[in-house]
Picture (cartoon, rainbow, N blue to C red):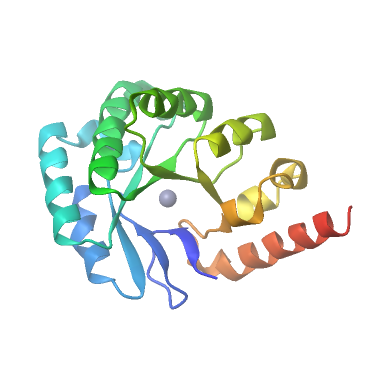
Length: 207
Ligand SMILES: [Zn+2]
């Protein structure tokens, strides 16, 4: 099983997400075994020049046909809420590029899943929604159902899978839509895979 969301190169392969523009060449050079994803993390949104980022993203996606888009998304937690305006603009840049180049967009949504759902639904109505992966998914099942209806897939790591509500949150997401990730802690990947497998065994056993 490959790592569905990481910022580190690992032998198991997986989606290697950039966090800022300066990171894109490092990410591109790691292919294979990694699948590079170009983007600007919402934590860095306020420092990113929008027009230049849009231009560069188009160029990198044209140059690397196997690459995807990310990390992007929204973060409405206390520390990052004030940059939500800049995050929203960059999110649309990323989603637009992903749609035009037919790539998947890898999205972060801490404290902002509801807002993100609204933005994705707007694009679906206009017929401009790319495929999306929601990483570190920790929303309620009702919300997962809404994202599933938009074709989303999810990834979760040790933090999410160790939560007391993990089985309630993840039990009803189909196995082919929910994958393991390590994010910023590559050493955690085997444990994330093991936790996800045991969650599925428990569900299978009707626990
Ligand atoms: Zn990440």
